[in-house]
Length: 132
Image (tube, rainbow, N blue to C red; front, side):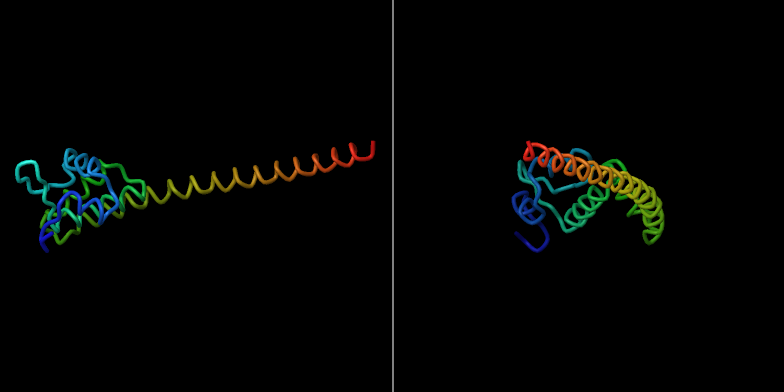
């Protein structure tokens, strides 16, 4: 590996992704490795983009949203448009995640309540069968 580029294998090891994932991101125009025959060489820019792609996926952004945000980087406004759009999308995703968390918290609470009831019923049934 040179300081400037990484092979597909090095990228996979460094970022815990598969070659297929990197090729898929390339096909979706998220990454733009240098092609030397069959060999792909990923630049520092590709590495930065991959970090952002993985972070965006973790936060629930779609690949299309991520691509659009990455494309805003080169607008020449010191990333003001990119940051504003990212913040807008992040607010939406945060609201969605918080709603999902609230639903999950409610389901967990309900399940615990049902389990307590079931445990009490089993204890009663155990006491009855032991008394007989």
